[in-house]
Length: 446
Image 1 (cartoon, rainbow, N blue to C red):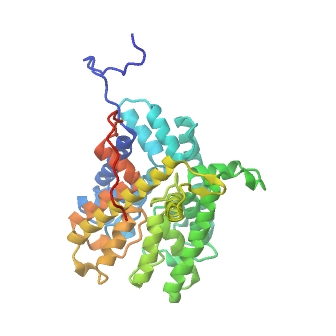
Image 2: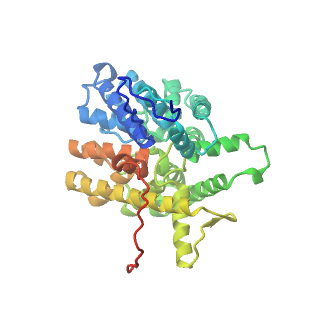
Image 3: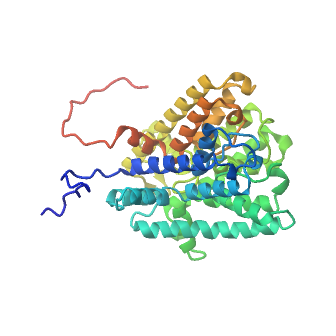
């Protein structure tokens, strides 16, 4: 008997059981979680008012499990009751942990073990290629719960005089670390997030959630004072994060000086990953929206709870352009040259992300009436970028969009969470190498 032969199906027909690819597992995991959440939000027991239409609850559940933070209604904290907020928080927590748990649960549901391909995919996603899946799950869950617990305790102290402060603290700690941006305060976050208090705690959680579990793991294990022990990836992530926070805040302050330095800093951090809003963006000018859109497209760092193209990918993409102009083939950071395969992967990822954003913007432009926002196309572009980047900042387009547009935004959020390359692999299947080679030819470029 061939030990390497694939297992037969349960019916005993002798045909090999078709195993789910990592791309299929990722897409199905988020899709099933979103559908289950949508059905739950249809229950009267979770709503303080009449339940929302199914399209809206599907939108909300997808936004939660994809840790986006976009809402189908303007007053979501008043729409859901405490039980509804609890279900929303559970979906955010599952989405923040990511496909480590959702994918593993889905494989078990289909009666499959976590094979070599899925182990490699998990290692690639979470920056630890040698770890066993169970060890990786334990590390991610332990890190998440520990940081959320510390954040919740600090927020509970900040909101000790607020009615229900403990529950608000727990909800916002999870929402901040998972980079979801949902809030339970009906009057908005601004009155409850002063810079020297809850606001600083929220920003710290958002930044930590956006660094990536591999970076957090390395920082946790690094003895004090041994900076040389940091890997190139961690050094690059920390440097890029600092530059984007400071640079984004400076650009936003120059665009909207009347809002103040704290407002600019909060938005600079929130725009890349979390989507927390101190107030609505009705005041935001076109330059401000473009700065926020740029930050949303860049997004968080790899292996994190945030979305976007990711900081290191953007750095590699821009560095490759510079080296190409200078006539060099090497992409070098910190005295280290990157593998050509990684550079090609970054170019493919950035291109596919741009393509998906273009499709989403085109669809929304066709479906959303211009009367919804006087800023017209810019507001539509901003909403699509927020959905694909799983950020959650909104100009209000999501609240008033027709059902077809909300369905498109729902798909866009799932695509942004699983990643454009994963989605394309799911739609097109795994490429198979071919022995056939064609003669080479040149075409005119540039």
